[in-house]
Amino acid sequence: MFFNHDLRVPTKVAVYKVICISILLYGSESWIPYRRCIRMLEAFHIRCLQSILGICWWHRKTHIETRNTANIESIEHLVLQKQLYWLGHAIRMLSNRLPRRLLYGQLLTGQRPVGRPKLRFSDHIKSVLRKCDIPEADLEQLAADRDSWRSTCATGLESFAAASDQAASDRRVRRHAAAQAVRVGPAWPQCGRVCASDFGLRSHLRVHQRPQ
Image (cartoon, rainbow, N blue to C red):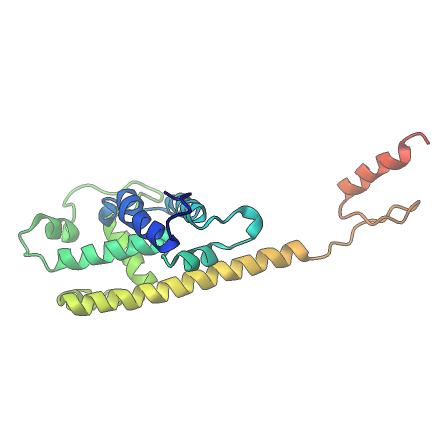
């Protein structure tokens, strides 16, 4: 389907959302993803979008441009959206429901191991609220009404997407600035060639050592 030229790009993206994204993020409401997991999911997401749009590496398209062309959000954005919606749904449940009891429950005995233990769902939810600029103290009040919680999540996810895209653009600018920086190295006295490093100077030395 991705390589079918008879289908329009919006149709391909719509089918990709319904089938691929739904299967890929099944059960993601209860995930506790680490950064390495998000990077792997994002890599798969971008590869699929590049196949749909016919983008190759020599086109020099950034991930942001690829997502904007396909009119789709990043994988982290989609995961956070599903988790925030599920969080509001769990908070609005009755106090005797199992998901709400697990959300607010704590172990009475035992202690966590020394060092940095694995993240708990509550810790992950706190980081999600910070990323989306949602005050933790007003969480239950905001989640009590379904419509207001949806608008709050939409605003928070929009600010998160803008901050994430800006951070990615800043990293790209820094990488390009470092790559384009001119490094002045030692010059070979016979030909005046300027090498960027001592290793390059030693490699160029072999040229002058060859028999004429």
